[in-house]
Length: 301
Image (cartoon, rainbow, N blue to C red; front, side, top):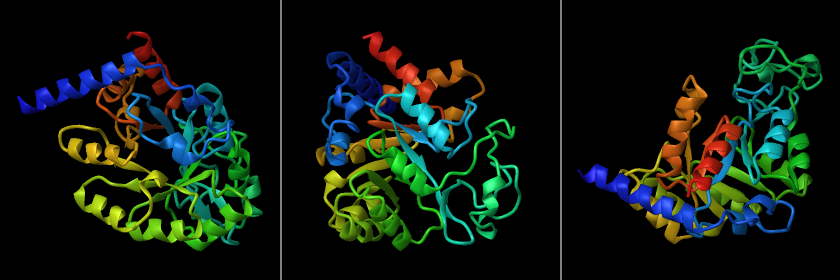
């Protein structure tokens, strides 16, 4: 009974929020109008939901994951989208975008990425989600960052790149005010904040212990969003409320769950459920589908 009451309350609250406010126009134009990341990502209780493209827009498209072309496509079809991408190192210390440590799944090459030089990767081509080889190549992180400025935000996940190299490249690109960094501990967040006080963070805050760790880092709450898990429900509702009180948007991810359902109809049902459960940001491998469901929910109210 307690669970049913919770879901009814959360769904009702979000429906009211969606129906009583227009999606703020700034959510669609922030990257062109000079708004800071802390202003753009601030939780304001207006019912707006942002979409994060997990590795771009690659599932059920012609574009491979972590491809520059997939990022470009998604920005055209999903207003206000930002992206989680995966920096990794080549043998000669060039930072590229690649989710796996090996090339086998996502390219027509084999073996560990770290065993290849950047020059050797020039002839490698990316595979799409079906496994077909495409004409797209592996992009460098620098290439992606320079393209993104003024268009979107890249959230750099934690892979195998030393953090001092990440700082150096962001500074080299003049992108301190345009980048988000995924952090798992308060110590990681503090390290980057001391060197780049304008950078935004995607902080992993799924429970009280992680909340306290991030709070102890002394980084302003306005500099972060919070990943709170796969959904918002009675298990993390109190935590979400605390984060909202600090102006922190709460993000969930449907990439490993709903995105893997077989049909678009099944996925749409689950996306709708998450839209009504109180998340402020939803991360997905299929942003174009989630955006369509979000617009349908808004139009029904």
